Image 1: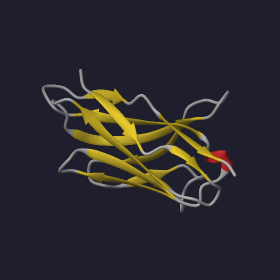
Image 2 (image 1 turned 30 degrees about the vertical axis):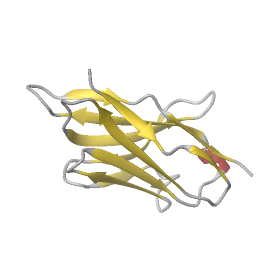
Image 3 (image 1 turned 90 degrees about the vertical axis):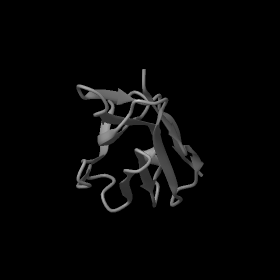
Image 4 (image 1 turned 60 degrees about the vertical axis):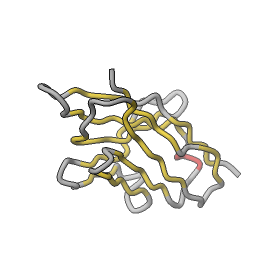
Length: 119
């Protein structure tokens, strides 16, 4: 079964930057729309950014202007560039995508990557 694998998380100081990547493990994956979610301790998982198959994007208000979602259609990879990071951005970040390989689309998740913003 295809799963997504996130990478690029870590510890960064306030004002710093990180770039998260999300790619499929194994074969049988073709990227359609994709999302980045995050979940902070004791909070609900929230949608951070979305990118559609045509490249149009959406951002939640708290990250608009600081985060950029992008995609590589050749390698079926999704990225999240995070600039001007704040302590409140600390969370586990999850990649989610629609896989259109095969007869019917499927919704696929990654295991998450920790982002910690702290001095």
